[in-house]
Image 1 (tube, rainbow, N blue to C red):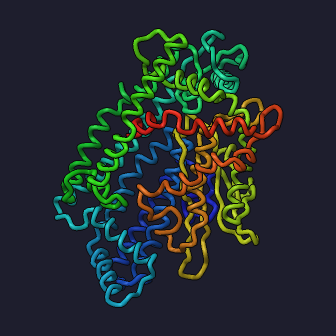
Image 2: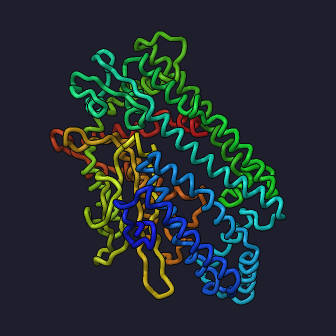
Image 3: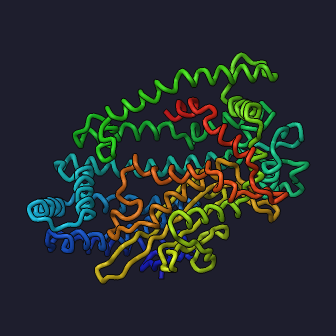
Length: 556
């Protein structure tokens, strides 16, 4: 049987292939369609008569689709792309068919009216119902037939374009590499980066490559690109890398420019069909900000606070660079990160490389778990081998209350795989806390995906402080999902939270990276085993807001 059918609590990731996906989805789609059709013909406008049965009818299909999307993100290949491309139109059409059901929409409204007259829903159920109504309205349930048909065409095209955009970026990223063959070309690169890039060279046929003698393969993978731009004294190489990064997927067969233009045009048309003045209005209608004016006011406030200071920071950086040998009229984009790091080292008297030697990945992970255990009275236990995984690097953990009661579980996919794995870091929910009709309780299951530097030579990788921060951030999302007490899946964990509020828990966890006991507790020097010295911690805290105005303006 296909691992996409009758998916158990622990998905069989090790058996998922493009070949066994497509037939399974044909079966799942047919079954979901039959179940939805039957429910549309006969139901009562109650929670147990409509809302729960509709969730149960759609869940097997959406569950399998989510897992297929995960495989596309972490084990990307032409075969997975073909299957995704073949199945996506039918999945989009099914979602729209459910969302645009006027029968269901009328029953949602009837249930809301009944609850207002004589409360019959819990607060959680009430919120889910309101969100469901809003989703149906933004899915075009109220549009005339001709407009609804055009709306559906737009939705299908937007889904295709979004997938193409992502694939183009991944392909363009892995297509570029710069090989450095002399120590002069690699001047300034820290030992950890030399080791990683020499390993990359060995992996692509340079069998004699070493960290000491090269060659070194420099790619656009974030774990390589960022430290290279910060530390390389080879300005010509920095320029090549910077231009390659900026021009990713901007020419030839991988050019995303027309895709962006099409997405913008289709979003405008979709918003107009739904009666909104812009796509921004449509997007914000289901967020906590609610309207464009609120967002514009906040952006203006932040710009006003940051712009002048950012200009001062830019002037100070140029003056510093000139005082230390830079001869150009202005700093180019490929100069900024390098000279900003030199200025930070000068002002705060520590280097990124010096700091990273204290953050060994296994110890950081252990310290993060100890913090979570202390804050939330839970235990986190390694359980590798107890659930199938999609790659040998993937770890599996169980979460329990202090008394041993199981609470959740999660996967961790920590390392970069530029050829097959999307860049960045994210958290996905594979399972949500769900009290089913028969009384059984499904526990949450999350996955944390990062793109840290890979281990080299059997040694645990060191982490840049920003990578530590990212790990804390993503674990904040995971904790919110795993420790929920809500038992309705549409509002459990991270589900149902407005997108402009979803970062609160993750940002909260980042703050612990500047807590002295926490950071000292998770630090161990790679050579000496000593924890982070107080003096270095104080320097790190002092540098927290270094070029903060510039960072704010970049975000805005």
